[in-house]
Length: 186
Image (cartoon, rainbow, N blue to C red; front, side, top):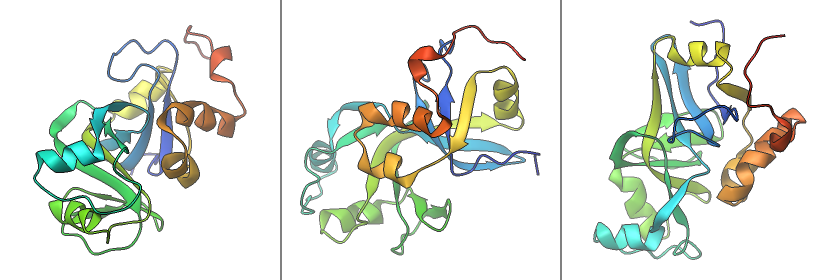
């Protein structure tokens, strides 16, 4: 295993990040191992609500309070596929346990449960994910492309998307506006 494991961490894009997919992004790392890493960008809502998504897939949405929940751009990989970050619990066909409190599910059965009002209490739905090949994330960290901090479920599930990046920065005790867009090493 790599010396670092950023599973269940936030990646905060440094101000110098110019990649349009990741500039000013907050990414939740779902898995990080010797083969690479995968995560979900959690602060990029798209112009699609959960009720609109459910209408597109011909599924009813009967879970109160979710109609206007935004769907997120989760990253540039498999943008036609849904990924659901959610609190632990439930028995879905294709679920990866991130930790004891957060899971990532890609099977349609979780959406069916949500539509029936039997889904997880906390969830974030995205289209696509972010992926890094073996050693790529470690190199990007060495190049000062990202800051990392242990993730908070409160930030992930309770805050609006536009507040997540600054809240993650506060976990580090830093204001995003004070970061330099010049990369360097001390």
